[in-house]
Image (cartoon, rainbow over all chains, first blue to last red; front, side):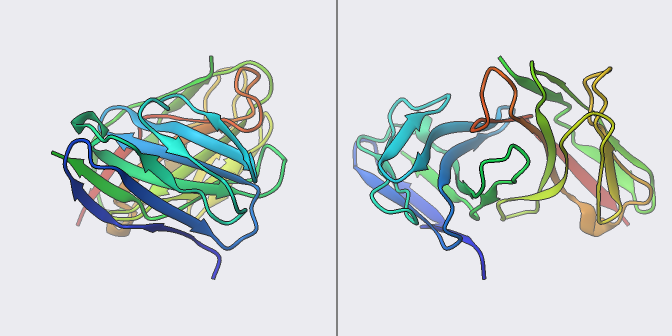
Amino acid sequence: EAQVTQNPRYLITVTGKKLTVTCSQNMNHEYMSWYRQDPGLGLRQIYYSMNVEVTDKGDVPEGYKVSRKEKRNFPLILESPSPNQTSLYFCASRGGLSSNSPLHFGNGTRLTVT
Amino acid sequence: GDSVTQMEGPVTLSEEAFLTINCTYTATGYPSLFWYVQYPGEGLQLLLKATKADDKGSNKGFEATYRKETTSFHLEKGSVQVSDSAVYFCALRGGSSGGYQKVTFGIGTKLQVIP
């Protein structure tokens, strides 16, 4: 089954404790992206990657890192989490270069930073 | 830059009522337009799309028409069901300011359908 898999689904941590949220897709998609979803703000893009070893900042990259060492994986790293990073995070991927190819989303990771 | 405007809601309707969720956009160039749906506890999934002016996207009884003259892509359904309760996101991709890689989302409209 074609899917984007994120782990964990829920994560509670404390300020400053490094964490990684994993994302993997099995569709051989070149493009992958991370979003955060907050009430009243919708989805905002954190980072994206056009292909292996190619990453770029989205609209809200501060406090986050990513890497793309393999095509299927795109982990999101919070080196020193802060409470304002409490949010619902989504990984997404997309194949094809045409503008009408849709994004495929994972089921989300709800992060709470205390 | 590109932007998408939609009401946050919630929109509460009785079963079998007619649904309209408004979406307007600001973008240069010729973006593609999308509606995504998010069911509780899940990620977003594509509901329908339209790639050029006057195109109509449709799926599962939902429809939306790409209106370039009014920069709108309103979502409609003739008769909603309880199972349609979800959050609906309007989105665009391919506007000139973002290029093909950037997808701009609206804030999402929560729909509640009561029996």
